[in-house]
Length: 579
Image 1 (cartoon, rainbow, N blue to C red):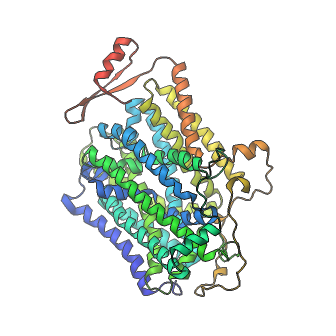
Image 2 (cartoon, helix red, strand yellow; image 1 turned 60 degrees about the vertical axis):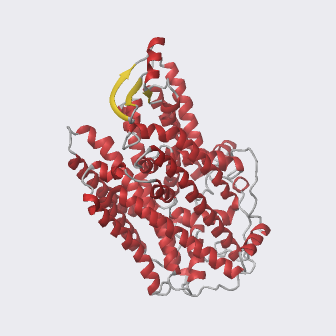
Image 3 (cartoon, rainbow, N blue to C red; image 1 turned 180 degrees about the horizontal axis):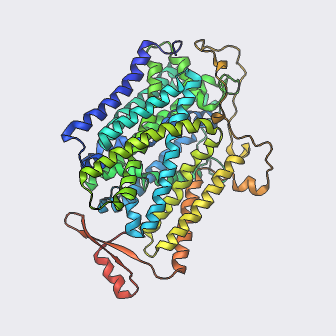
């Protein structure tokens, strides 16, 4: 690090870490401290739209976005920008369909809804699936960017892993959701600043944005409008807009990470406003990431560091570029590393906060006899501390798993689709019952896992992914002399699966080549279809009817009905039904 980082770089990087920790201390004692469960997990339901919108944007714009999205543009083109359309559809769907249901119920955990609508067993299955996927994702969310940065910048691997885990655990355990939200606000600006430093510097070196765009056009990186309807094509207009909408609706509509934030808003209007303002943040971050990818291509269009073996994996390209072009400007390499770690902090802190909420509400609280708010607050803080320590352990486990991590990363989408289908069944299908929904969830989850993991063993052939050509024609001189790149060996985490010994068949080539963006859509639709069919086959259905004081929206009683006659069904219209 002494060859790459100056004193100013250390100041910038550690300043970000200390600021996050300081926010945790502040919100641990501000306003009388986080003495109740509502204070700790839901920020007293008193947040406004502006900070929540930035927190929503930061929560899933992780280090994967900082390191991965520009490389996606570099290798496959700027069609990734079409995700802006998917984001708009997601925000509309979430704000009009899913958010009103959760907000009017006043739940803390989204899985409380599943018990209200179906039964305890369905709630428990949904909770366990969420906890498993999130624990796996936490470890990878810390380890993956730390590894990529370590192998290119020399940044201490385990030092950064432990530091990230400790900082996140510290401010989550002390300050609760309010600390997480305001830390996300800061991290959003840091991510945009890091992206901007790359965009500005590449523009200066290449003669302006016009030159970068011209190079991208000459290299075929500006092909947006591929209307190929085949679901086997990795990125087309349809896979990005339709598949991306399903994927991100699973995140914004029903995932505890995001739902917990907009439910913490003081009014339903503020919650809806937060979602729409968040859309602007998503568009800004997406545009910055795509411009970084185009700048990356402009810089290396004639000498690709990956194919010329200057780096061992595509995920290392952005750190490589940052070190090369920013090292002469004290503080800027530190800003880029802080940018990547800000994404990690936002994702991991969101995970810890969400896990604490679902664990207390779904697993602990139902087994306590009239617990006090202080007791629940202590449980919330304790579970946050537990999951923070666990995330460091999962990062250690991730380092030993090698290529299997790619399958684990895909699990995040594989589980999200069936869970979205389960909630959609409850909200939009009035005759879905507990048994049918449970069977639909299991079938959707099984098929999604089968196809998703199979795709890791049998990755799609190049004619399906359409990687754009990379050149090594001018790889005679490297401008970066700060590091000996060959001293960083290739790590199994950053390698694709080796499939030379696996026999490919027509079925494999088609089934496992389905675009990864359609995995969530597939899981959702299968869950909804199978759940509907089995609900009809199993006959009577039950509805949990929530009685709500319509003057203020507060829930005041609950009863289970089994409306079997026309008269009973007509009675339901007087109440708000968990649809």
